[in-house]
Image: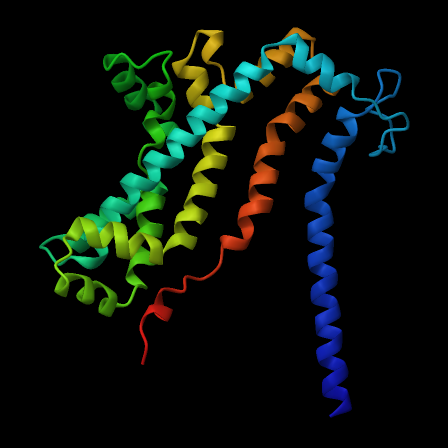
Length: 279
């Protein structure tokens, strides 16, 4: 009995030590980025062995990076594009997933399988046809052009369909008995029941739209529409790769994501939809 207890304790310690090591390894690049952003111009950022914490912390890099380019405009553009992308993606994904999960019609599984199969297609493969379509629609240098690829996603449809399938049929049947339409069931019953899935999808879509570099680079040639990733790349070129300023701009870019995730992570939990049905 004692040997079994010690064996379990040893396995637990080994597991936690392994997880801690992986966590530290993943945090080291972030620590180096933040430390570089606060280092004074007199400090060597490429010294060996590397020094992660600055000896003379300064906010000069943040001030210089913010004033050297219209960073406020970049932040506003990123917020507008990311927010609109999240809203439209949640709307389209949930609307597409509802009939695929709750309604019976011929070819439903074939359609769903085809949608899921597109997840395996890299974005770079469809970039050229997407770009041609966006140009033909007159979407260059517009907010709509920036959010165009993210309006719908196969991953979003898959995630919402799986969430909808976990909602008890009793809730849906009760709403139909009360005379609720299919659209009303989707809005009043299904969406509130899968709120954790909606928030999870919103986080993924927001991070993807906020950090996207390739598509804005292709669809934009007017600086007033630049998002943060494009602005940071311009910052790097302006100062001939002054990594302190690039690091400061990168910290400004990732700060909203970290803050948003810190506030929303408590909502990423299993759905309580089943609690609506009493035995």
